[in-house]
Image (tube, rainbow, N blue to C red):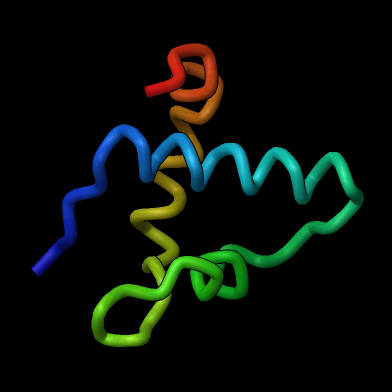
Length: 64
């Protein structure tokens, strides 16, 4: 079952990605997803991250 992320969670994910990129760190999505483990201990799937990050400009313009 796919997990639904709140706007705050999406914002934090996008902000962390932007911060890392500005610091010159370019983690693969698989690695980046592990920074946000779920209850199962696994990270966010690459497809979910891709969906969230594709809207990062809009998400970051409207903080929760």
